[in-house]
Length: 56
Image (cartoon, rainbow, N blue to C red; front, top):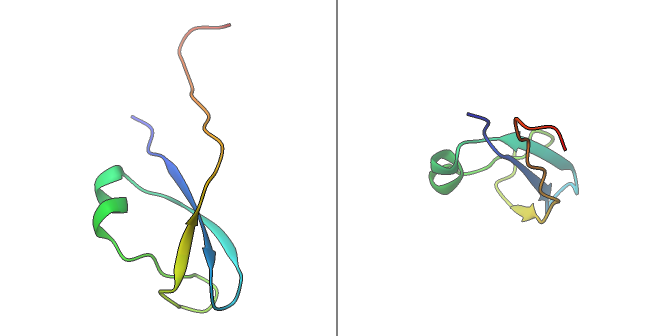
């Protein structure tokens, strides 16, 4: 099962980064900026990509 990729932006250093997390991890974990270590991050809205087993 593929886990979703969440995109974030740090409010302190303005770095954008992505994390692959399960929904449970996303709900319970405090995200930390990999650039400056700040907890002041906001989740960005991103496009959704569905991978299917059938060819279109």
